[in-house]
Image 1 (cartoon, rainbow, N blue to C red):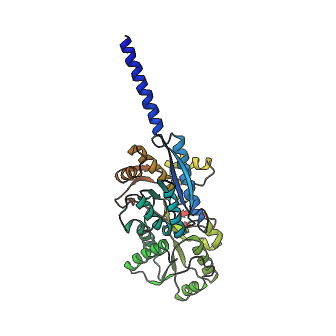
Image 2 (cartoon, one colour):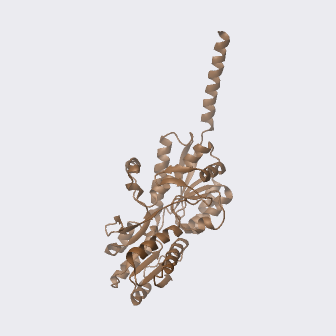
Length: 373
């Protein structure tokens, strides 16, 4: 009996040691949330921050990722490529191994090179430029949004099948994201023999677009596609309506922001925009939407749920790989599928989603939107 009792004590001690050992190995995993926290498109940074913070809070409340808790670290790149590089280097120097962001494609692309070289896992919920994953092979770079060569054809398909315009203008802001998606739309329209009579870049940040508006009017265009962000799109639409141009305007998710209504006013009524599906309206996400509301955060926008999903994928991969080593986590992400608020996520070898659907919405002057028919 004494021998058996001694064995029992040894077993209990071993179990206790194992339990404490497990706790000892748990750690706080820092996740940088990188994007424009200031500047003209800070609204998109706010969306990403809202999604990522909500995910971090919920995962921590549930015990963490395999016992590891997350800590958010905010990093502002103002959607400027040079500042994004500085932010990426700062993230590396601080030993942070996970990033949700960056937001703008022009910032994400140079930052991603640093993360890839330094073994930092980056998941962008918003950068859609194909160059991010096409330019070179990556192990550590992922998205939770589709690419412009998916978004552009989705927009063009709607234009070709539903609008059937006679004269089209395709404009862009000369930047990676805007020019890329505009070129994709133009290529699809050209293939369908839809006449593109104007294809031109404008300077982002200008306050007067009367020159291009005059050109649109002289060419008699009845449809305008703009690749870029809401500040420029809003001004162009407002100034076009002031000049009596009645053309239908359309843009990518970068214009799908309530502030475009503040800029364009009534001219924003009827604008078409391609966006990710309205994940906040999905009944499967009802409890999550309540969690956003409880934290006084808005779940309605193109990037909140993709950002939330990015954090969840990192957490699930840490749990699945049983490691916080970013190399093991990245390998696990490539090899597995994940259930997220944006649906079932699975990656190809480039770090792109195997499938993603962009939906065309009609924008209204009260900043609401409805799915286009």
